[in-house]
Length: 157
Image 1 (cartoon, rainbow, N blue to C red):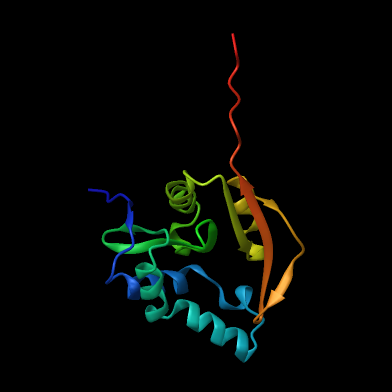
Image 2 (cartoon, rainbow, N blue to C red):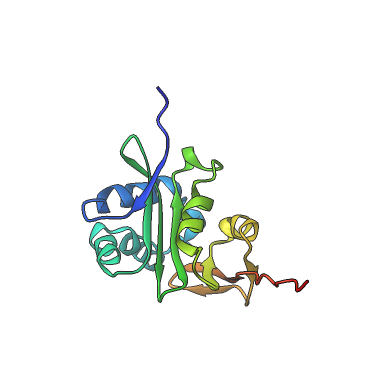
């Protein structure tokens, strides 16, 4: 019997698995410049206590699970800013990131993200466009991007 991916709200108790998912999804050397400050920043972002705070924040968070293992995670802050989106490498390319994004962003007219260079292609596929110049903060490069939900025009007959 083949297991399928289940999508649900992140809940307390998921923090350690979310942290593990983030570590299994990311290449530390692609996301940081390798300096101690950038590695400390990454360690803080992945810390289960930090993730617990995100879950309790009331902001949008969801996980994708397979056999009760967290294989994907998404978190927003400030309402429409996508702050974290990770999918374990072995599950990459199966539409999990797209589905997590769709479930969280369906009711948002505009979404912003500061994308890692390696993630720009994914964000372009789901409708984002670069909205500013690449920047470097806390040892991490980011590319500001924005997705504006297309408006549907009614045709009068």
